[in-house]
Length: 169
Image (tube, rainbow, N blue to C red; front, side, top):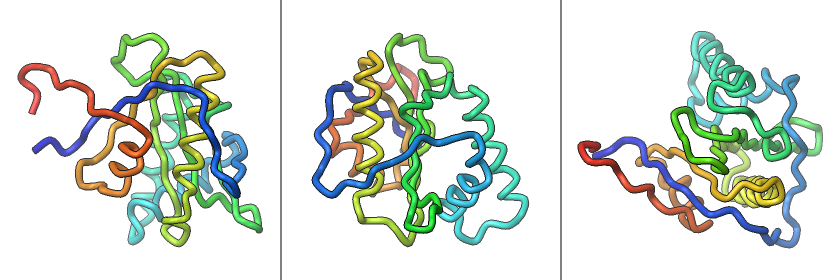
């Protein structure tokens, strides 16, 4: 079985649900807070070394390793005291992709204490709306096949599995 699955969706205007969270743009000064959120989201028992690796990963996204960041579509939701509790980081293409007009969701994560509240869906809708406004035709993402909540979210937003090339497992 393939551990990672690539999905893509057409980008169009998005309706925002009533009472949806209002995100703010992610900024490079958010690096440490995004690193902490990333670790809490994916690796709650992570150590200092994992924190360094996570910071490097987020830094590479900001630096354009995964394509040029799209600041208008890279968004964060903050709680009442201003802490980031969910974020989406979007670039203009996936590394190695030659498909013009395709944006790439490099990361979408939510703090475990704030899951199942629609925050990831709010971020995804807002990012897709921004991408449509900016002229992008499609958006892609790569998801671990064992991440059922992420798969359900993307499939609910009309993402479809990209066709595998011959020889890929």
